Amino acid sequence: MLQPVAVGHKTLADYASIVGRTLVEEIRELAEPLRGKRILHLSATAFGGGVSEILYTMVPLMKDVGLDVEWHVIYGREEFFNATKVMHNALQGNPQDLTEDQWESWRRYNEMNARELSRGWDVAIAHDPQPAAMHTLAPEKARHWIWRCHIDLSTPNPQTIERLLPYIQTYPDSVFHMQQYVPPGMEGRIHIVPPAIDPLAPKNMAFSPEDSVYIAEQFGIDVDRPLLCQVSRFDPWKDPLGVIDAYRIVKESVPDVQLALVGSMATDDPEGWDFFNATVAHANGDPDIHILNNFNNVGAIEVNAFQSHADVLIQKSTREGFGLTVSEAIWKARPFIGGDVGGIPLQVHDGVTGYLVSSVEECAARAQAILQDPGLGRRLGLAGKEHIRKHFLMPRLLRDWLRIMSDLKG
Ligand code: UDP
Image 1 (cartoon, rainbow, N blue to C red):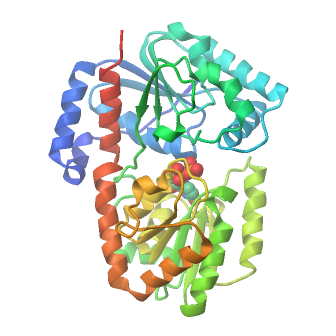
Image 2: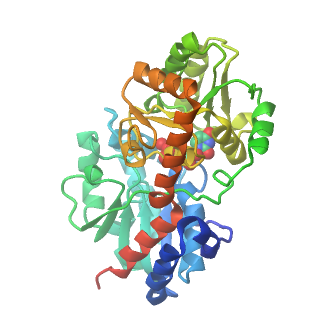
Image 3: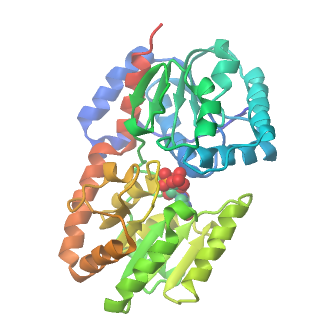
């Protein structure tokens, strides 16, 4: 029922030249007393989205420093995932709550998984709301329980958070990206730890300019003309329509500019496809707007190539839990413009490591300024990359997890 996920092998030592020896040594010291501890990560999926992105690196690195770690994906069928999708949106502010049947289904699948869960874990970490009831339903299966929240709970649908709260508030420890995401009523210890990216994953590893040009060209990009690019799911909160509007303003003064909107799609997400189609309609056949998704063979390497090649990277979200795509973009040392919301300001110091914007017009003005002054773009890009190197790479996140585990009570 619960599926163990096979993760590859990663070595912390490989990261030393990027994040520095001091951090790597601190990690080794913290890990020593935790050697052999049995750690379980529980999540809803091993494919797509920020949580799996992080676990594919975090789990191998935790193993590499001596912990005995497994990652299990909970069992669920369509009705469960329909319910958790509604829950996810409602918790981030959508007015639609789950129906009684959907709440029932969420609880029933949690009960099934809780029954199946094996015993003897030192620490079980439940990621996001999908498996959040597991602690209440089977507390005896692990010595310590931690709830890791990856979403923005600052303005949830009141009915939804009220129903969920009894299941999450009793976790002895919980971890949030930002203080403002912690819902009132949490009873245990709260840890504030933002996520991080893997600089050595195919999506983020260093490409030569020739490599990215070669790949971008295969997708119809004219590599001799300026390119704006946003990578994100096709979702209204990511505002791809606003990005198209900003591109049109830029085009008035930079006629040869192009735009690439790159996003991954799930086959089972009809809303995503509706919004994808709305984005295509908004582009209105403009040959300089390239709308690409994983069904056109765009995977991690291609995302890397687009980001490494683009002249301006954009994440014009109007709502954003953290935005891994922001750190991924800035890590390519390209100038970045992002919406001034959620976790984006953590990753961008306005005017120094990129720009924060709150409207289409502002986004367009910043993009124009960067395109007209390549020196400005270079300065922002390099300062941005340095900020990400210090704060948003995976070894820092590993250290924060080890600190939390070292301090668990009992
Ligand atoms: N992603 C991807 N291909 C795409 C779009 C997104 O691989 O076409 C990845 C992206 O690189 C990031 C994750 O999916 O690692 C999305 O995480 P983020 O926090 O940016 O946003 P979310 O989708 O979780 O709201």
